[in-house]
Amino acid sequence: MKNMVNYVMEAHLSFENRELNAVDSLVLSQLAYLKFDHVVLGLSETSSPVPIREVVAAGNPDRLFQDVRESKSNRQLLSAFVNSPRFQDTKLAFYVNQLDDKTEKQFSAVTFLLSDDSAYIAFRGTESTFIGGKEEFNMAFTSPMPSQEEGVFYLNTVAKRIPGKLRIGGHSKGGNIAVYSAIHCRKSVQNRIEPVSYTHLPSPRDRTRSRMPSSA
Image 1 (tube, helix red, strand yellow):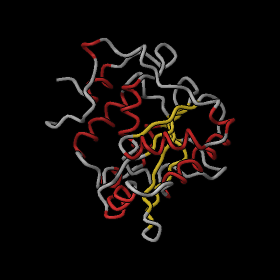
Image 2 (tube, rainbow, N blue to C red):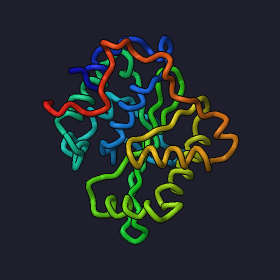
Image 3 (cartoon, rainbow, N blue to C red):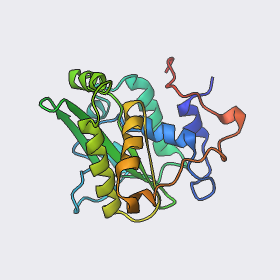
Image 4 (tube, rainbow, N blue to C red):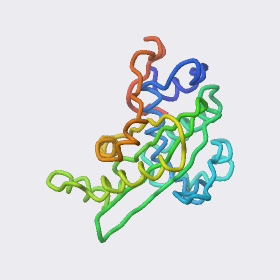
């Protein structure tokens, strides 16, 4: 049964030859759950993008996958990503990871700089922490949430730092933050946001299910 790991392993066309699609978006949103602390710098103007190979080489494997659900599957996904002709030139920048008990905020985002000079901003979904669970509960009756406002700030700030096309997304709560941020960011930023393509998806035999492989 095909899954995200299979897709990444079999994805040979560059982003110049096949634009970013919904499955690519799923892959990048999943990788946003990894812990890039101390490897990818934050929103500082002096921070430099880090090639994905350097991220893997510099990062402590146990720290990268700390508290990440289905850690073994995510390790396989990252390994395939680093060795994929489609993804191996990706760089990471502007990693933010915040957990605030007082405001009940769990927010994390990272920017993937792709080989076609576009950027994909990925917002992390709910983590398996008390604050993450509490915030998800609060979303049922509170708006805006601290993480939503943080998402707007992050998107506006990243847009200042880099030129070119922007795409945004995320899994679960991350998707909610992505939509909220796109609606409430500056108009000049909205004009740069590109839709994720559904017209150039892989052929049916190469398509992936939207879950991590449970057997991996």
